[in-house]
Length: 281
Ligand code: ZN
Image 1 (cartoon, rainbow, N blue to C red):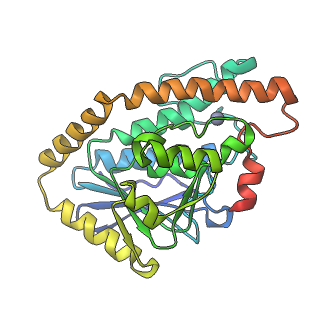
Image 2 (image 1 turned 120 degrees about the horizontal axis):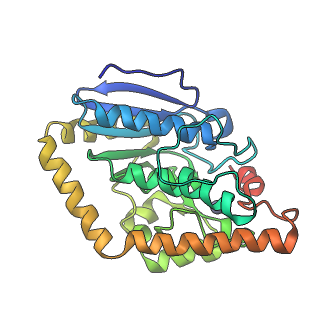
């Protein structure tokens, strides 16, 4: 399939190596904060890479100093012009219903969809990865981090349990997961690697080269072997209960959102605490 950029504004797409597609978050002026437009474009780009028979490996990278500062709710959360690719509906419903449906579709639904792409995926990460930023990194199969990368989920400060893709215990282990959530602190790339959350830590100036070298190496291996290996590991993690755990946490996440709205009429804290999160970025 020929590359069809479809006038994307928030992401770029290229093929920097044979059999390797690279999708780049291209909103560095906002620290790659994710609005619905970015997530929708990202989903289209993943589909292009997944359906291109010449591509075996997909790299997710980011322009600028920081990989992603999380979700950007300030730009509005309308879905009127966006394609719905998941199974959710009733986005305009009042109360908790519409809000929960939108997060199920645009956050948890899309991230889970990318996690299950039948090709290896590699996140190439620099700078800060905050809250919703983790939801782009964790669904990828491999993570290459530069030595300046940090990872945090500070949203407990705003009365919710954590981000919507609640894979903390699977990604970082139960102890570090609780440390991250209870303290809100940012863990370093080295600490993340020590806990199995990151595959490689490389100097910042070598991040692109090292990521593409890894992608090229994997891209020379047989597609069906890669696909079935990925599926087998994913099946193992699923058998441990990842998806069920995330669905359970997603319900509690929306109890948190609803609690904030009931208790503070939405005025004391943004449901995602995005303002404070953005100030950190
Ligand atoms: Zn939420």
